Image: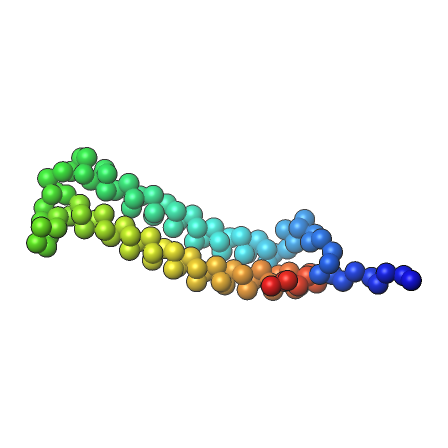
Length: 113
């Protein structure tokens, strides 16, 4: 008995062919437009606290609410900043996932999930 022909979903993905597609390039650019600036922002924001405390201690010691000074407020704000960046990434990544499925379907591949 002869084995049936494998479907496109069973074949390995031809990434070289997909890589040359303009939709793939657009997807990569879309990711870079978020990931690169978000990473730069995160690094600058993260290191602003130790730089501020080290070079501008008088400013960072100013009380802004009760006993909370600018340094403590800034340190706590980093938690919020990380969660906001994570939420933005999750929303963007769901769009990228849809684009990926569309791109793979264009070449006859289907997602297994």
